[in-house]
Image 1 (cartoon, rainbow, N blue to C red):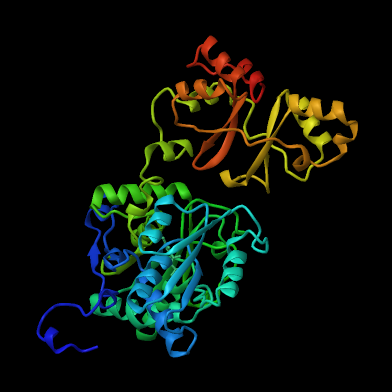
Image 2 (cartoon, rainbow, N blue to C red):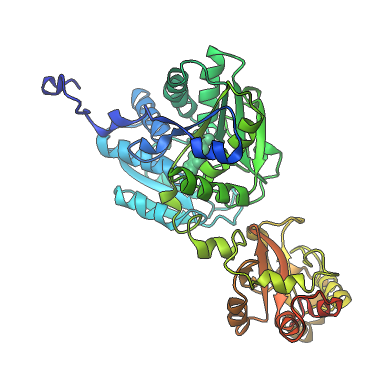
Length: 477
Ligand code: PMP
């Protein structure tokens, strides 16, 4: 649409014309602090109108669908999205007259739901803890709504317009902004649209440019089995269409803890507010940049802003509860330290083990309850599915002696309340008034079980000397 009245002005024709052309900024403070000699620069995708890199594929997917006749005037768009793609689609939909329904999991930060609603979209929230083929899963719900509403589903995971948008725009921008001297590109991979599109473009210009994916520990890209993690928007439990490992020179797994602490560190030291996946990408980029030559230019892709994560990554109470930060000196961890002499790992039971095995484990170790955890250690907090308790088991077996030969998941009770290893002991005491035991988290993972006996023993013994006798009470209610 060429309106002659705009000629010679700097008035963009619509918000869609503001997508892309994001700035590249040097990370000078981080480089100084980390002893990095090369140029480390951040591609700041927050200046897109929707505040994230996802505006680019959103626009490309809608324009392609219009060209292909998949989206008719006044039509509806349905997409399962962690938020950023939803914002991009909502912006494009607003400009081009479509309605939007977004399907999200309950892992996503609540402010992201409010944000999509603010753009006039409808949001459906589904549980994260179900299998993809469960009718409640966000994949299944999106499928059903697409059919019911006769809607267009962009499916960012399989739509070639997603990587294509980054091939068309992000790649050329990076090449031009570095005067063709970029040597390394580091990005988190979610749908893989950004990394694949950029990689294909940059390698077409110079095949020696190294492409490095940052991946949450547990995700399949770095060899995990798709076990849960807390960083949002990146990593996967399956391989999407844009996964092209031959374009990647290296994949670096990064823990939730390192991702979140890096996001906070970058925000504080550079004045660039970034989210958890940006923190993950920067953590990987710092490792790459430390090993790079002084003349190299390492670019890290920052997909969105920390503003979307104020109630999580940037909330001290949330971070402390997962054991990512310490609140105090006299913390829960100190109680554990006094008794860890012979309790090195978490005692747990799998949901498919027999109740009799759980009883044996409790009896052998003299404990009164066990968390029920899926898989094998190290567990993610999301892999804890419940707990078994001697009192509840005793009652169940009293009612029906055959309970001992059923599986734990049939009889388990609620999950133990969680407390971070760096939270105040005072808080543990408060919580133990209503629960016999607490699950202690460190770095987002279950570390141990803290009982009333543990705290009592700590208070009555010399807290600063490790007394092996104090370990007797561990997990004992
Ligand atoms: N970080 C965040 C917060 C995201 O929403 C996404 C997109 N899912 C990514 C990173 C990864 O981008 P891509 O899907 O292009 O791999």
